[in-house]
Image 1: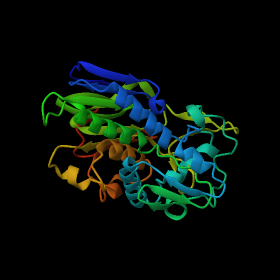
Image 2: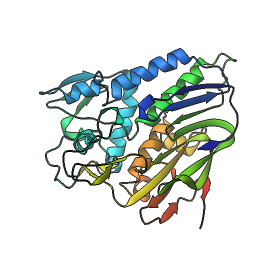
Image 3: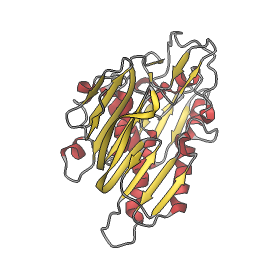
Length: 326
């Protein structure tokens, strides 16, 4: 939930990435081109679409060479940085574990056929089983990739670039806009918008608020994406890629990445090929389930809030908001 300024132009795509996408702007948008790119994005990176490149990789019995669009290069760069920062706890090859636990096509959360405690051995990894040449990925066996840790945020950033390029108000004009992809939010606004931090134990209430203007915020929590396996065990989608098991000690995380021109966070968080604050915030919100904030801060500039399953909450010093008490 968020509150702030009103926008005269909006685009709502309720089924995008399984969570929906809302774009609001002070300038007119080219709805047709945005819709077309969203379809291209999902056709490329969704493991839930049978016509996607990821589906082709998963179904290639002997592997192969798979060419992705040029716009995928910064996403691959970011994943490699997150793999390093988390000691491979974040790895796109986690798709195999998600499928094993029952996170199926069309976000159906099909009943898993394997108990979550079964040892996950000899599984493919990004470092050892995916040979990367720019945006071409080469494999020798089926590889189930899942870019969910950063994927929603990356789409938000690419749409933001489209909004800036599309405006015809005047040369050099950057419209105010807010893009929300299921809680991954990019705000290019003045004044700030207010974002509620949803209580992971009671989704009808908030545990705090954040105020963002030229920044991205992303949240991760299992509260809205969990299901039961065939053994009647409740599991969720936030896995450690090393052992393939759901994280059990963290309830919710939020990460904020600043995007102000010339800011230190902007330079420190720039992956090769561009700057993508929402993708980074999205990935960090997942990484906070797996890695201490202090370790991540050695690699990235960000602010965060974490809530453990025992409801112990931690707020970093520069987080632009407050937690409620009581």
